[in-house]
Length: 365
Image (cartoon, rainbow, N blue to C red):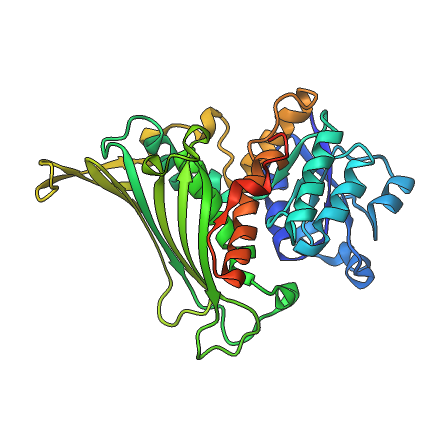
Protein backbone atom coordinates (compact mmCIF):
# COMPACT_ATOMS: atom_id res chain seq x y z
CA UNK A 1 0.00 0.00 0.00
CA UNK A 2 1.28 3.47 -0.91
CA UNK A 3 1.54 5.89 2.03
CA UNK A 4 1.73 9.69 1.86
CA UNK A 5 4.45 11.75 3.51
CA UNK A 6 5.51 15.37 3.97
CA UNK A 7 8.89 16.96 4.51
CA UNK A 8 9.14 19.47 7.35
CA UNK A 9 12.07 21.67 6.42
CA UNK A 10 13.40 21.68 2.86
CA UNK A 11 17.12 22.33 3.27
CA UNK A 12 20.09 20.16 2.40
CA UNK A 13 19.23 16.99 4.32
CA UNK A 14 15.67 17.04 2.96
CA UNK A 15 17.08 16.65 -0.55
CA UNK A 16 18.53 13.24 0.30
CA UNK A 17 15.22 12.14 1.84
CA UNK A 18 13.49 13.37 -1.33
CA UNK A 19 15.71 11.15 -3.48
CA UNK A 20 14.91 8.12 -1.32
CA UNK A 21 11.17 8.81 -1.38
CA UNK A 22 11.27 8.94 -5.18
CA UNK A 23 13.04 5.56 -5.29
CA UNK A 24 10.57 3.85 -2.94
CA UNK A 25 7.45 2.71 -4.76
CA UNK A 26 5.32 2.65 -1.60
CA UNK A 27 5.90 6.25 -0.55
CA UNK A 28 4.49 9.39 -2.15
CA UNK A 29 5.52 12.94 -1.24
CA UNK A 30 2.42 15.14 -0.98
CA UNK A 31 3.67 18.25 0.78
CA UNK A 32 6.49 20.48 1.98
CA UNK A 33 6.35 22.52 5.16
CA UNK A 34 8.89 25.28 5.79
CA UNK A 35 8.96 28.67 7.52
CA UNK A 36 10.75 30.16 4.49
CA UNK A 37 7.85 31.56 2.47
CA UNK A 38 10.15 32.62 -0.37
CA UNK A 39 11.31 29.01 -0.72
CA UNK A 40 7.72 27.77 -0.73
CA UNK A 41 6.85 30.32 -3.41
CA UNK A 42 9.46 28.81 -5.71
CA UNK A 43 8.59 25.13 -5.20
CA UNK A 44 7.08 24.82 -8.70
CA UNK A 45 10.32 26.00 -10.32
CA UNK A 46 12.59 23.46 -8.60
CA UNK A 47 13.71 20.76 -11.06
CA UNK A 48 13.91 18.04 -8.38
CA UNK A 49 10.17 18.55 -7.75
CA UNK A 50 9.09 18.66 -11.37
CA UNK A 51 5.81 16.85 -12.04
CA UNK A 52 4.93 16.50 -8.37
CA UNK A 53 1.59 17.84 -7.12
CA UNK A 54 2.60 19.27 -3.74
CA UNK A 55 0.78 21.26 -1.10
CA UNK A 56 2.85 23.69 0.98
CA UNK A 57 2.48 25.53 4.26
CA UNK A 58 4.49 27.02 7.11
CA UNK A 59 3.33 24.65 9.88
CA UNK A 60 1.94 21.16 10.28
CA UNK A 61 -1.14 22.63 11.98
CA UNK A 62 -1.98 24.79 8.97
CA UNK A 63 -1.20 21.96 6.57
CA UNK A 64 -3.62 19.59 8.31
CA UNK A 65 -6.33 22.25 8.35
CA UNK A 66 -6.20 22.59 4.58
CA UNK A 67 -5.10 19.17 3.31
CA UNK A 68 -5.52 15.45 3.88
CA UNK A 69 -3.47 14.23 6.85
CA UNK A 70 -0.29 12.46 5.70
CA UNK A 71 0.81 9.12 7.11
CA UNK A 72 4.35 10.30 7.80
CA UNK A 73 6.26 13.49 8.44
CA UNK A 74 10.04 13.62 8.04
CA UNK A 75 11.50 16.39 10.18
CA UNK A 76 14.57 17.90 8.49
CA UNK A 77 14.92 21.09 10.52
CA UNK A 78 17.70 22.33 12.86
CA UNK A 79 18.28 20.21 15.95
CA UNK A 80 16.93 22.78 18.43
CA UNK A 81 13.45 22.64 16.80
CA UNK A 82 13.03 18.85 16.88
CA UNK A 83 11.25 18.27 20.19
CA UNK A 84 8.51 20.84 19.49
CA UNK A 85 7.90 19.74 15.89
CA UNK A 86 7.78 16.08 16.94
CA UNK A 87 5.06 16.77 19.49
CA UNK A 88 3.03 18.94 17.11
CA UNK A 89 3.22 16.23 14.46
CA UNK A 90 2.44 13.24 16.68
CA UNK A 91 -0.46 15.08 18.34
CA UNK A 92 -2.09 14.97 14.90
CA UNK A 93 -1.68 11.18 14.81
CA UNK A 94 1.14 11.27 12.26
CA UNK A 95 4.10 8.89 12.26
CA UNK A 96 7.43 10.69 12.38
CA UNK A 97 11.05 10.34 11.29
CA UNK A 98 13.27 12.97 12.92
CA UNK A 99 16.74 13.84 11.71
CA UNK A 100 19.63 13.49 14.13
CA UNK A 101 20.83 14.64 16.57
CA UNK A 102 17.64 13.77 18.41
CA UNK A 103 17.44 17.02 20.37
CA UNK A 104 19.53 19.84 21.84
CA UNK A 105 19.55 18.61 25.43
CA UNK A 106 18.62 15.59 27.49
CA UNK A 107 15.33 17.06 28.67
CA UNK A 108 14.06 17.61 25.13
CA UNK A 109 15.11 14.07 24.22
CA UNK A 110 13.15 12.67 27.16
CA UNK A 111 10.09 14.63 26.02
CA UNK A 112 10.37 12.99 22.60
CA UNK A 113 10.54 9.53 24.18
CA UNK A 114 7.44 10.43 26.20
CA UNK A 115 5.66 11.40 22.96
CA UNK A 116 6.43 7.94 21.59
CA UNK A 117 5.08 6.29 24.74
CA UNK A 118 1.95 8.48 24.61
CA UNK A 119 1.32 7.35 21.00
CA UNK A 120 2.25 3.64 20.98
CA UNK A 121 0.50 2.94 17.66
CA UNK A 122 2.58 5.54 15.84
CA UNK A 123 6.00 4.81 14.42
CA UNK A 124 9.04 6.87 15.36
CA UNK A 125 12.58 6.86 13.99
CA UNK A 126 15.72 8.97 14.22
CA UNK A 127 17.78 9.46 11.06
CA UNK A 128 20.94 7.65 12.18
CA UNK A 129 20.96 6.09 8.73
CA UNK A 130 24.66 5.14 8.70
CA UNK A 131 23.55 1.88 10.35
CA UNK A 132 22.08 0.81 7.04
CA UNK A 133 25.06 1.42 4.81
CA UNK A 134 26.34 -1.94 3.52
CA UNK A 135 29.80 -1.80 5.11
CA UNK A 136 28.36 -0.98 8.57
CA UNK A 137 25.76 -3.75 8.31
CA UNK A 138 28.59 -6.09 7.29
CA UNK A 139 30.54 -5.16 10.43
CA UNK A 140 27.50 -5.82 12.62
CA UNK A 141 26.81 -9.16 10.96
CA UNK A 142 30.40 -10.25 11.52
CA UNK A 143 30.86 -8.94 15.08
CA UNK A 144 27.63 -10.41 16.46
CA UNK A 145 27.98 -13.90 14.97
CA UNK A 146 30.88 -15.66 16.72
CA UNK A 147 33.59 -13.60 14.98
CA UNK A 148 36.90 -15.23 14.11
CA UNK A 149 38.75 -12.46 16.01
CA UNK A 150 37.17 -13.89 19.16
CA UNK A 151 35.94 -11.93 22.15
CA UNK A 152 36.03 -8.19 21.42
CA UNK A 153 38.25 -6.19 23.80
CA UNK A 154 38.55 -2.65 22.45
CA UNK A 155 37.89 -0.35 19.50
CA UNK A 156 39.87 2.50 17.95
CA UNK A 157 37.75 4.82 15.79
CA UNK A 158 39.10 7.94 14.09
CA UNK A 159 37.33 10.14 11.55
CA UNK A 160 38.48 13.56 10.37
CA UNK A 161 37.90 16.14 7.66
CA UNK A 162 38.04 19.87 7.03
CA UNK A 163 34.85 21.89 6.71
CA UNK A 164 36.76 25.05 5.82
CA UNK A 165 37.42 28.31 7.62
CA UNK A 166 33.75 29.31 7.98
CA UNK A 167 30.72 27.55 9.41
CA UNK A 168 27.64 27.95 7.23
CA UNK A 169 23.88 27.50 7.50
CA UNK A 170 22.08 26.59 10.71
CA UNK A 171 25.13 24.69 11.97
CA UNK A 172 26.76 28.06 12.71
CA UNK A 173 24.69 28.19 15.89
CA UNK A 174 25.62 24.77 17.33
CA UNK A 175 28.01 25.12 20.25
CA UNK A 176 29.49 21.59 20.06
CA UNK A 177 29.03 20.92 16.37
CA UNK A 178 30.94 17.67 15.89
CA UNK A 179 29.52 15.73 18.82
CA UNK A 180 25.98 16.87 18.01
CA UNK A 181 25.99 16.52 14.25
CA UNK A 182 28.51 13.87 13.15
CA UNK A 183 29.88 11.91 16.12
CA UNK A 184 26.39 10.71 17.03
CA UNK A 185 26.46 8.63 13.82
CA UNK A 186 29.67 6.94 14.94
CA UNK A 187 28.49 6.46 18.54
CA UNK A 188 25.30 4.88 17.25
CA UNK A 189 27.37 2.63 14.99
CA UNK A 190 29.48 1.40 17.91
CA UNK A 191 26.28 0.35 19.66
CA UNK A 192 24.76 -1.12 16.50
CA UNK A 193 27.84 -3.11 15.46
CA UNK A 194 28.66 -4.50 18.91
CA UNK A 195 25.12 -4.87 20.33
CA UNK A 196 26.34 -3.12 23.50
CA UNK A 197 25.41 0.11 25.26
CA UNK A 198 27.90 2.91 25.88
CA UNK A 199 27.82 3.23 29.67
CA UNK A 200 30.75 5.50 30.48
CA UNK A 201 32.21 8.50 28.66
CA UNK A 202 35.20 10.73 29.34
CA UNK A 203 35.45 13.57 26.83
CA UNK A 204 37.58 16.50 25.79
CA UNK A 205 36.12 18.77 23.11
CA UNK A 206 37.83 21.85 21.71
CA UNK A 207 38.84 23.79 18.60
CA UNK A 208 42.44 23.53 17.38
CA UNK A 209 44.50 26.58 18.24
CA UNK A 210 44.73 27.53 14.53
CA UNK A 211 40.93 27.50 14.02
CA UNK A 212 38.77 30.64 14.01
CA UNK A 213 35.51 28.76 14.56
CA UNK A 214 33.24 29.35 17.51
CA UNK A 215 32.33 26.22 19.48
CA UNK A 216 34.10 22.87 19.50
CA UNK A 217 34.99 21.15 16.24
CA UNK A 218 37.13 18.35 17.64
CA UNK A 219 36.29 15.44 19.93
CA UNK A 220 38.42 13.01 21.98
CA UNK A 221 36.43 10.32 23.81
CA UNK A 222 37.24 7.33 26.00
CA UNK A 223 34.23 5.03 26.19
CA UNK A 224 33.15 1.92 28.05
CA UNK A 225 30.63 -0.40 26.36
CA UNK A 226 28.68 -3.14 28.11
CA UNK A 227 25.64 -5.38 27.93
CA UNK A 228 22.96 -4.51 30.54
CA UNK A 229 23.95 -7.49 32.71
CA UNK A 230 27.56 -6.22 32.76
CA UNK A 231 26.98 -2.53 33.44
CA UNK A 232 28.73 -2.90 36.81
CA UNK A 233 31.28 -5.53 35.76
CA UNK A 234 34.11 -3.46 34.29
CA UNK A 235 36.26 -6.47 33.44
CA UNK A 236 33.60 -7.48 30.88
CA UNK A 237 33.47 -4.05 29.24
CA UNK A 238 34.64 -3.30 25.73
CA UNK A 239 36.70 -0.11 25.65
CA UNK A 240 36.77 2.40 22.81
CA UNK A 241 39.00 5.32 21.93
CA UNK A 242 37.33 7.81 19.58
CA UNK A 243 38.64 10.83 17.68
CA UNK A 244 36.43 13.02 15.47
CA UNK A 245 37.27 16.31 13.78
CA UNK A 246 35.86 18.87 11.33
CA UNK A 247 38.86 21.22 11.50
CA UNK A 248 41.63 18.77 10.61
CA UNK A 249 44.17 19.82 8.00
CA UNK A 250 45.31 17.51 5.23
CA UNK A 251 43.34 14.65 3.64
CA UNK A 252 40.30 13.34 5.45
CA UNK A 253 40.06 9.76 6.70
CA UNK A 254 37.90 7.23 8.51
CA UNK A 255 39.84 4.48 10.29
CA UNK A 256 38.07 1.86 12.39
CA UNK A 257 39.75 -1.06 14.15
CA UNK A 258 38.31 -3.82 16.35
CA UNK A 259 40.71 -5.77 18.57
CA UNK A 260 39.77 -9.21 19.87
CA UNK A 261 41.45 -12.03 21.76
CA UNK A 262 42.13 -14.00 18.55
CA UNK A 263 42.66 -11.25 15.99
CA UNK A 264 41.70 -7.83 14.69
CA UNK A 265 39.31 -6.42 12.12
CA UNK A 266 39.58 -3.22 10.12
CA UNK A 267 37.05 -1.35 7.98
CA UNK A 268 37.85 -1.60 4.28
CA UNK A 269 36.17 -0.83 0.97
CA UNK A 270 35.00 -4.44 0.58
CA UNK A 271 33.91 -5.04 4.18
CA UNK A 272 36.40 -6.06 6.88
CA UNK A 273 40.09 -6.88 6.64
CA UNK A 274 40.97 -9.55 9.21
CA UNK A 275 44.19 -10.63 10.88
CA UNK A 276 43.72 -13.90 12.74
CA UNK A 277 46.46 -14.74 15.24
CA UNK A 278 48.26 -18.07 14.95
CA UNK A 279 49.61 -17.93 18.50
CA UNK A 280 48.57 -16.49 21.86
CA UNK A 281 50.76 -13.40 21.52
CA UNK A 282 49.56 -12.59 18.01
CA UNK A 283 53.12 -12.34 16.69
CA UNK A 284 52.08 -14.49 13.73
CA UNK A 285 48.81 -14.17 11.89
CA UNK A 286 46.85 -15.13 8.80
CA UNK A 287 45.14 -12.50 6.69
CA UNK A 288 41.47 -12.99 5.87
CA UNK A 289 38.38 -10.95 5.09
CA UNK A 290 34.63 -10.72 5.56
CA UNK A 291 33.00 -9.18 2.49
CA UNK A 292 29.68 -7.42 2.09
CA UNK A 293 28.26 -10.29 0.05
CA UNK A 294 28.83 -12.58 3.06
CA UNK A 295 26.59 -10.40 5.23
CA UNK A 296 23.41 -10.87 3.22
CA UNK A 297 20.62 -8.30 2.89
CA UNK A 298 20.53 -5.52 5.48
CA UNK A 299 18.62 -6.68 8.56
CA UNK A 300 17.35 -9.62 6.49
CA UNK A 301 15.19 -7.43 4.26
CA UNK A 302 14.97 -8.63 0.67
CA UNK A 303 14.53 -5.05 -0.52
CA UNK A 304 17.63 -3.26 -1.79
CA UNK A 305 17.01 -0.05 0.13
CA UNK A 306 19.99 1.30 2.08
CA UNK A 307 20.67 4.24 4.37
CA UNK A 308 17.60 6.54 4.59
CA UNK A 309 15.74 4.29 2.19
CA UNK A 310 15.98 1.44 4.68
CA UNK A 311 14.47 3.65 7.40
CA UNK A 312 11.59 4.42 5.03
CA UNK A 313 11.09 0.70 4.48
CA UNK A 314 11.07 0.07 8.24
CA UNK A 315 8.53 2.87 8.72
CA UNK A 316 6.32 1.47 5.96
CA UNK A 317 6.27 -1.91 7.70
CA UNK A 318 5.57 -0.20 11.01
CA UNK A 319 2.52 1.58 9.63
CA UNK A 320 1.26 -1.62 8.00
CA UNK A 321 1.57 -3.38 11.39
CA UNK A 322 -0.31 -0.67 13.29
CA UNK A 323 2.81 0.33 15.21
CA UNK A 324 3.72 -3.18 16.34
CA UNK A 325 6.88 -3.45 14.18
CA UNK A 326 8.74 -0.28 15.18
CA UNK A 327 11.78 0.98 13.21
CA UNK A 328 15.05 -0.06 14.83
CA UNK A 329 15.97 3.60 15.41
CA UNK A 330 12.70 4.33 17.25
CA UNK A 331 12.87 7.06 19.89
CA UNK A 332 13.32 4.67 22.82
CA UNK A 333 16.31 2.98 21.17
CA UNK A 334 17.77 6.12 19.65
CA UNK A 335 17.75 7.87 23.02
CA UNK A 336 20.65 5.65 24.17
CA UNK A 337 22.88 6.89 21.33
CA UNK A 338 21.72 10.49 21.77
CA UNK A 339 22.45 10.28 25.51
CA UNK A 340 26.13 9.53 24.82
CA UNK A 341 26.48 12.83 22.96
CA UNK A 342 24.97 14.65 25.93
CA UNK A 343 27.21 12.76 28.33
CA UNK A 344 30.24 13.81 26.28
CA UNK A 345 29.24 17.48 26.53
CA UNK A 346 28.77 17.17 30.29
CA UNK A 347 32.05 15.33 30.69
CA UNK A 348 34.07 17.86 28.71
CA UNK A 349 32.66 20.83 30.59
CA UNK A 350 32.94 19.25 34.04
CA UNK A 351 36.19 17.34 33.48
CA UNK A 352 34.83 14.05 34.79
CA UNK A 353 33.64 10.61 33.76
CA UNK A 354 29.90 10.49 33.08
CA UNK A 355 27.78 7.40 33.79
CA UNK A 356 25.48 7.39 30.75
CA UNK A 357 22.72 5.04 32.07
CA UNK A 358 21.80 7.72 34.61
CA UNK A 359 20.16 9.59 31.73
CA UNK A 360 17.60 6.82 31.21
CA UNK A 361 17.51 5.03 34.59
CA UNK A 362 13.93 6.19 35.32
CA UNK A 363 12.70 5.65 31.75
CA UNK A 364 11.10 2.41 30.48
CA UNK A 365 13.58 1.82 27.66
